[in-house]
Image (cartoon, rainbow over all chains, first blue to last red; front, top):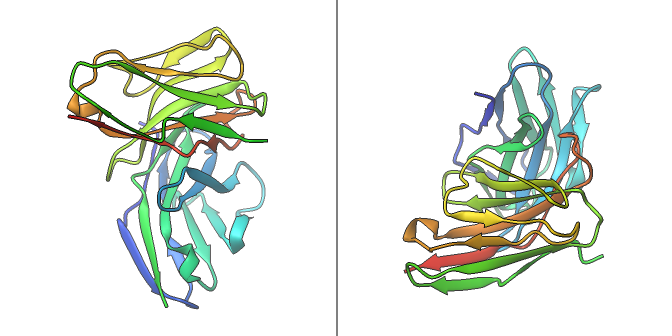
Length: 111
Length: 114
């Protein structure tokens, strides 16, 4: 089955430190991969996507993600985390015209 | 643009009751979908529509009905509510049928079935 996995339920980092949220995928063919963020009591907001081309994708709020075909990964990164980045992050993959979401990773950035 | 709007924000139902969750978008998007979000399970697709008059089932369609009479509106009906339908429901829309377009989500409806 085509899917994504987020191996960490929670990620805790100190403000100013690098933030990484992991995502691996399992699809046949070329994957279309997405990251969304959900702040408390809000809907999901689109952060970035990989369709084709450059393996490093830049998105909103200073986030970026690196597509790695050999490792089937699409990890989300931010060089310097902010307390306001504390939220629930979802990785998703197109399968084939809808999205399949990972279980989500809760990010807590402590001051 | 208001984007994707959902009503109500909160709802409590008794087992066996029926209700309709409303969803509307003002972006002229062809594709609309309904998801439910449960802890530790991510978002699961309930039903989706690729245009007015066309709907299809997603991963977890049982107990829910949808219709799409206009481009703007995509209501979700719970036929006979069950405690297992306690969840947060999100409506989403996107432009076109290609899977490379990002989706826009509504603020959600938190439903409790007692």
